[in-house]
Length: 251
View (cartoon, rainbow, N blue to C red):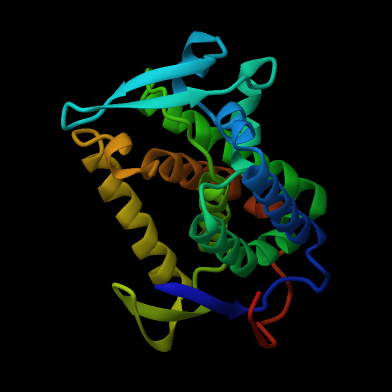
C-alpha cells in the first residue's frame, strides 16, 4: 500500500520543519551523487560504532554464498559515532529517497503540528538515532554501511498511529510493479500492516541477516518502537487539534 494522501488534522500552520527535513535529505542525496566517498564515510558502519574506530580502506566481505566482495570504506567524522546522525539524512538511490520522502511528506506534517516545530526536530532525530543503534546492535560486527531516513520516518509513522489511528489514508494498492486503484483505509490498517511486515521480516533476519536482504529491518523496528513509546508519554501534552478533520490533503 503506497500512501498518496491523508486527512489534514491537527492545528493550523505550515510544517516548516518537515519541509526543511525533506529539503536537507534531497540536498544531501544530490551531494552523494557527486562524492561517493561521502556516502561510505558518513554512513553508519556497525563495526565502527561498536569498536569506536573509523575503518578506512578496502575491506573484504564474505557473502552468504561464500563469495567475497570489496567495500571501500572512506574516512568519516570524528567522533565516528556522529554517523548515527549523518546516516539518517542519506540514501542509497532514487527509489530509496523517493519512497522515504513520500512517507515523510504524508505523515510528518500532522506530527509536527501536534508536537510543535522544536519538539518535532528533537523527536525526529531521537527516533532516527535509536533506529541506527537498533541496526548496529542487530549486527555489531558488520562492515556494511547503513544509511537512510527510514528509521526516523518509522518513528513518525508510529506517532501518527498513536495520535490519529482513525484518520483515513488514501493509498494505491500495488501488486508487484502493477498499481491498482486508490482506496481509503484507516491509519491503523495502513500503518499496522506496514509495522507487522517490519516485525516479521526483522525476526526472520535473525536467521537470514539484513546483509542478505539489503534492508535494515531492525532500524525500522527500533524507530517505530521509539516513536510509540515517546508519543505515548508525550500524548497528554500534545496538540492534536480541537476540531474534526476539515479537509483531505496530499500532505
